[in-house]
Image (cartoon, rainbow, N blue to C red; front, side, top):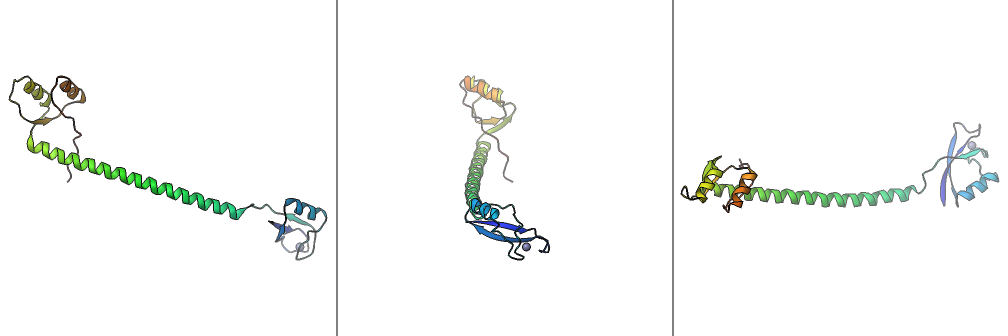
Length: 160
Ligand SMILES: [Zn+2]
């Protein structure tokens, strides 16, 4: 069954009168229309026109709801994922902070002298001791190639 919105165009109906009618299908509507079986319930006039309808409106809105549910599910899982990543990042940051503190506690800060001192220690020029400082990625790689035990860690900001 299809529900069509019809409009009476008769001059007897004040302001184009709209009404709804049920039909088996579009063919049924066309047939009744052709046979002059369609009449306005107000004035009985046969000059009625079919208005544009949105078919299967109910079904569509249900579909939308389902889609929304699906979307919500996606949103939730995405949020969970984001949160998970944030937590992981927090853990890593916390770990690096702890690591940094340990390094600061157990070794001497030599700043930009780090590469030079690390190399000198390796060559036995100066006494070996734990140090930390700055070096470029290239410096670190070179030291590692020379067999010097250096570790490049991201120097996270302190947790104030
Ligand atoms: Zn009418």
